[in-house]
Length: 212
Image (cartoon, rainbow, N blue to C red):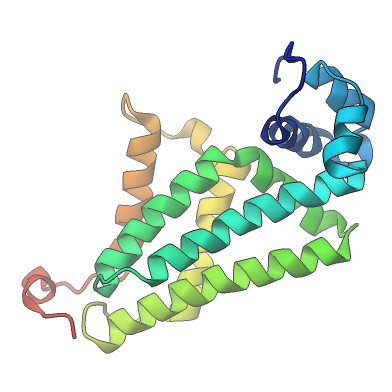
């Protein structure tokens, strides 16, 4: 649990972080402004000043996190890399982002189940569609240009998204034997596993094929 802050005036980012943790733990309906301000070590006026209400605070968490995901897609779309390189570096970045924001992804799962806020569901669906389409295009390009073997691209992308999410939101990594750098080891193993599903057996073919 996050320790209460003694700062005279918590920053907006700090309020978002602590509120996100509380919402992920207790859900939207189970989290009160009083609980959040107690963890902050501040009064409810801070919430009103920055967000107006509990609902405004909740919406801002999603707005901030989904904006980060969108900016990430924009950066990777512009990279001048061949499909295997682009897919690999994106998977690494995506895994690290999910791992660093586990509270948000638990909160996201809670929201998708409860469906209390339709406007949030619409925003989440749009953000996830962008990620899905980016991955689908990257895999499709790799197959078309001979970098990847022919697979069911749609099922592969669904597997990517569900695997990475479940590993970190369902605590599935707790029983896995990892090296002294658990996060790096887990990231490497997930990326290696996913890339192996697309790899053409003749590795020399991949190394020598030029990107058009």
